[in-house]
Image (cartoon, rainbow, N blue to C red; front, top):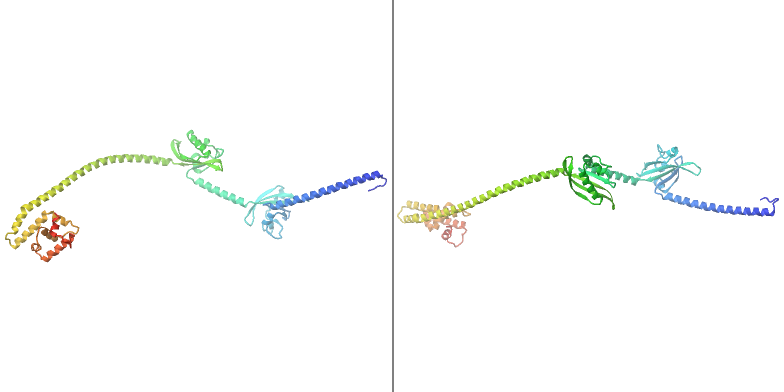
Length: 438
C-alpha cells in the first residue's frame, strides 16, 4: 500500500476497504471449502451409487483402456493387471472386429447392442460419448445383465409356441375375445368355419341374426364371470348344425380381461343319434309286434301243452289200467291153470318148459320186472328171473331146478340181488322186500 501524499483519513479508508476485502476473501475461501466438501461428498455418494448399481459401468479412452469401472464391472471382468476392455471382459488379446462400442466416436450418437460373455451370461450394452474434464472424449459404457430376462423371454416364446401348436391342433373351434370385445386369437378350425376374425367383433362375422343373438347372449354371461356351457343349434348354410359350446372368462385377479371359447361340432353325432333313435323306435315297434305275436303263440302252446299233459296223463292212466287189467287177467285166467298144470304128472322136459313159461309170463305182465331193471345198479337178466321166482314164493332149490343150475349158484345170485337192492347184511326178508316193487 502506498501512502505518499495521502492524508490520514484516506489511509484509514483504504485500511477499512482492505479489511473488508480480506473478510470477503475469507468468506469466499470458507464457501469454496464448503463447496469442495459438498462436491467431495457428492462425488463419494456418486461413486457409492455407481458401486452399488447392478449394472456394469465403465469409462474407456480411445485406446480401449478402462479409466473407471464400478464393482459390478470388476466382478464380471478377468482379474489381474489387464487394463483394456477386450482383455477384461472378453478375454481377448486384441480389439474385437468390428468394435461396436467405438462407433459412437464416429456418429456422436448413443448406441445399443447385445453381447454374450464367456460365462454364458448375456448383456445389453449402452454406449455413449463422455467428455472428460480436459474435454477429451471417453466411451461411457453401461452393460445390463439381461440373462434372466432373455431366459424368461425364451421360455415365454417356447410356451407361446407350444400354446399356439396346441391351439392349432385342436379339432374344434377355439377363439379368444379381448376386453374390447374384439377377437384376438382363433385356430385353424375356426378360420375354416368362420374365416379370419382376429380384430373383428362377433357382429362383424355372424352369418345371421339368429347366430349373433346366441353369441352375444353367451358372451355377455361369460363377461359377467359365468362359465357358460351347453348345446346350441341353429341353421347355417341351409342346414341345421349343433355345437357343444363352452365359454369361460379370462381373469387377472378379480378383473376379467376377456373370454375364451370352444365350439365342438356335434352335428354328425346328433344326426347319428336321431338315426339311432329312429332305428330304436322301429326296433321297439317290431319287438312289440313280435312280442304280441309270440304271446299269442305262447298262449296257444300253453293250451297245447295243457292238452298234451292231459292226454299224457290219460295215456299213463290207460296204460296203468291196461297193465293192471292184463296182470289181473293173467293171474285170474292163466296162472291158476299153470299152477294146476305144475301139480300134474309131467315129464322133466315138460316141467322145464312149464317153469320157463311161468317165468316169461311174469316178466311180460309184471311191472315188477321193469322196476328191477331201473335200479341204479341194474340186475342181470338171470338175477331178474331169480328175483321174480323169489317174489313168487319159489324156494332156492325150486329155482335151481327151474333154471337148471346148482343151489350154490342160486344163493350167489340171491346175495348179489340183496347187495344191489341195498339190503345186504340186513335181516329183511328178500321176498317181502321184493313185494314192495308192485
